[in-house]
Image (cartoon, rainbow, N blue to C red):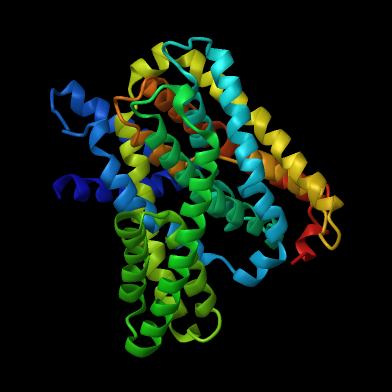
Length: 408
């Protein structure tokens, strides 16, 4: 409890510092966590935090909040109008992204004994989860097209859910097995069962949650029960995806807030904004605490390889999405300006860190995968994110975003 209180206090103090330094809040949290841990270690104080203790914290405390908070905030009607592009980014092109990244990591590292295919695939999956936090922060200061924000938020939400399901599935199949023993067709069928089973359960919880809000009020408490209830019932009782269940539950309740639950919408949005802030802050601070100097000394080559792989694959995926969208009848093309922001804003953040923190020590190559994930997130927060604002301002100055501002 004392550690949790210290984390909250540190996050509160770092937020104004991040604004003063014009840094993304997430970057300040990672830097603050790293500096604080190094100071404590230098003083001979053991924080008691270990990598292997993070799995339950990440999967049963942070993830339900992060997924539900993002789902509730999405406008379902705007989501449906852009669903084709979002589904392309979040499902088939996510799988392509994970496989291409894994191939680049495996052959780039070139050490099958210390970094087998299973580790490369897990690395590819972890690095495929995008985080629009920097673009969201930027949208508070600069006008951005609603369609662009929806594409980024929708992609992040759906591909985060898919990434978590893939990660858990691959991890359960990989630990204790040889890579050749994994049946990919069985993995694909299980992925469909987990995903659609979770979505169906989440829809039921969303309907029940909406009914209870209309009857009992107390929107934050009821939604909290719905979010965690859908997640835990899915994971622990029915054996389907808790993340997909929480996603569907959040989308249904979020849609209800914009229709028949409008009087409690502000209260619920405010409550979940605070819960999301706490979860994100704790996650990025814990990531900073677990970063070590030895990672950068011993795994710098793998980190650079991961950064390069992510950038190359992201460029390919964004242009494929734009091309397929423009070829689909009835779909509005994605402009070059929006493509540029989709590419530059495809940062890696909370879910990438959450999955990297939860890697089991018995997985061969786990430290290399974790180091790559940390290196990519650090690059996203300290290099990519600060470059977004100059890019957007340049596009606005040239008038390239003007037409996009009128799009729904």
